[in-house]
Every structure is written in structure tokens, then in C-alpha cells.
Image (cartoon, rainbow, N blue to C red; front, side, top):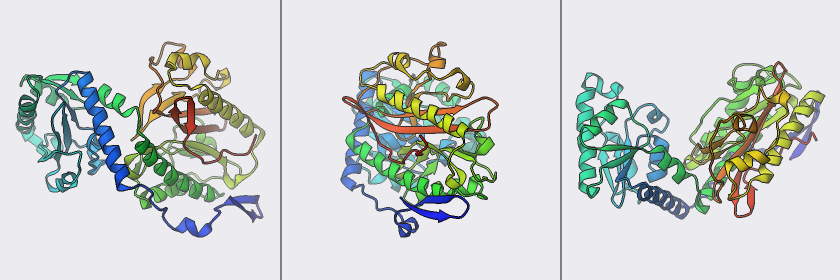
Length: 421
């Protein structure tokens, strides 16, 4: 990173190659990588179906449809409109039920054996005919189970409206919790998935450099936040899950959403990317810096030091085979002055979005919250913190994304922390 001189703030970072800021990045992901990743992911689902002795998995969540088949169609819209779904049969076909005018999106995928038109029975699409359409839909699902299930009528479902549960049960279908299957399948990433995720991280960090370059006095939170979206979309990314960027006093308490608030020289800017990038993979990292890139105040530096210590300590202790309770016992002890504004987790999984597991900080685990589990090689974890004092002016937000290896972790993101310490 070069330095440029600003009469207000002195030396300020800028792009090494200013011309590159105006051009998209070069996509390094090959078709073969995508094919291998698709095959691995569907095989993970099939292994879990056998493990849980279910005849099939029915997915309405578009991220689970993406994981199982790699078919993408109006992902955000179908998060709240059940217009499409997919079914993976244990030992049988993977079937995509697509929007009638979009069936071509799934037809050339090697992970999809059959494409059928979806029968929509959510109220927006079916109105007063909802019961009629739900019955037609349920008949088809039950018929598939009878044809391919070998007498097994256990159907795992990730999420579904109550009417669907009732009407399938009336047809002899036993509904099984499907999120355990999808979340535990998605938990372990293949090398090809990591390659794709690294590309998303590169895109995200390019957006972060744009944000950093625009973090000047007089800019609104929304102006700065828009740079992340710009870089993501022009490089084939998909969406950003949250609006978690705040400046100055709006960083405390955390979770205030990006707005038209104007940053002033020396204000702390904190953000959490939650970016779903190319091929649907997530980069979930956080950084904090000052508007105008001024040296930190004593309080900003103090908060930043505590945040860095928590991130570094918790990352260092992560080992394959460690249980979540063992992690908790060894985790960074958050000073009590920061308890009120603490983040909800010490770490969580990430893949196509934030995923299982979610492990709270020691403050909550020691009070009986959370659950146990085991850290395994191939998991990708986000280690994070919010550090601030209740009633204080600002909070520091930091988060890194790491791959669990056979002997520890490897950090996947490379955007530098501030050189304040």
C-alpha cells in the first residue's frame, strides 16, 4: 500500500495500483473446480441421509438447494417466497422443482437428475387455492418417496410452512428435522470449496480497500458501505446479508445499521462484511479504523488492544478434536467492563452463509448457554469480538475467517489490522 499526503491528516493509505480500482478482478475458478465442489457437496448430503436413515431430503431454503445441487435462481426472493424446492433421494435421483419459466437453470447441472415445474402453495402464489395446491404438491412428494424409498417414508425437511407438515403426514410421510442434516453436511469443506471461498474473500477484501479509501470526513455510512456491494456485484458476487457498518457513537451499542450518518475526522468506523460472494460462498470478516485514518485516541487504542488480544488468543487455542466446552475453558476471559456489549459468539462456522456451529463466549457458556460439539479439520470458523463499554462512545468490531487444519488453523483472510499496537 502506498501513502498519499493529505493536509488534514498527513499520510494516508491508498491502492498500490490506482488503475486497478476501476477494473474487476480476474476470476481464477475453473469449471473443473466447480464440478468437483458440486459433487463433493451432494455426496455429503447423501452420506447424512444414510446416517439418519431417511428416504430423502426436501429443501426449501435456497442455500440448501444451492449446496445440494448448485442451482441458483432468485436466491434472495426465494428466501421469503417458497417458489422452488429440491429433493435428494437416498440412493436415488436429485430433483429440482423450479419456477416454471426457469427450469433451464438446472437442466445442465451434473448434480441434477431431473427438473420438474414447482407447485407453489404459498399464499402470494396460490391465494384462496392454497389448500388445493398444497394437496397437489404433497401428492407428488409422497409419490416420489413411494417410488424410490423402498418402503422408507421418512422425509427430512429443512424448513416448511405448517400446512405442508400436516398434509404430508396425512399421506403417510414421517417428517424428520432436516437442518441437522444440512448443517452438519455443510460443516466440512473440501479443498475445492476452500479455493472458491478464497476467491470470495479476495473479492470482499477488494471491496474493503475501496471502503477504506473512501473513509473520509463528510462521507455517510451508506456511501462507504456501497463500495463493498459495488465490488461484490461486479465480480459475480450475490448479496450482503446485513447492513452492519457504523461510525462514531453509532458503533455503541453494536448492530445499528448503515445510515446517512456522516463521519467526522477521527471517528471510529466498524463493520462486519457478511458478504455472499461469487458462487454463493460467504466472506464474514470485520475490521475497525478511523475516519481519515487518524491515529487512535487512547480509548480507541485500548479497546482495539483488548479486541486483538481476544481474537489472537481464541484463534491460537483452536485445535482439531477440541470440544466446544474445552474451547470455552481455555478461551479469552473478557474483562467484566466489556460484558454488556460483548458479541453473541466467540466463533461460528461459515460456508454459504453463517453456519453451524455457533459457540458463545465464556460469559454465556458459563451460564449454561450454548451446546457441546467437536472442532474438526475442514471446518471454516469466524473468530470474532465486539469490544466496548456500556455507555461508552464507540465499539471495536474485529473478525477473522480461519480454516481448521490437522494441527491448528490457517487464516484465510489477509486484510491487515490497524498498526495501532
